[in-house]
Length: 150
Image (cartoon, rainbow, N blue to C red; front, side, top):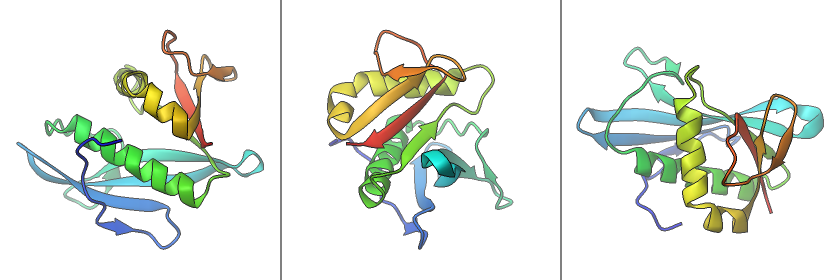
């Protein structure tokens, strides 16, 4: 993908965290993309996008509204591509961290918009409910996603 994105400033030795900085009208906001094992028997890892707050605590519920959503999503996608190139056998799970479903809607729109590119690199599945998933269908709404490198 050739979208503007932020440079990754730091990668943890075990690739569990990637750090970058969002820049916009609200200033520079440190961000972390973190990968954490969810289910070892299925090799599923959760990916989370976190803001580093002024007290140093990471938050997945903060809404920074820094005017750079496309750059942030492009950066997370580049990180996901790097991570899965390093660990192609891992499956990556993600969903929105808000109860209103706004974040998952943003993720779904982004996947739908760039699906023709993403599907060349990843197998993408959408969760219809907690236990039922299907290959991504741009016409359907999902609660969460699971991706794996092809």
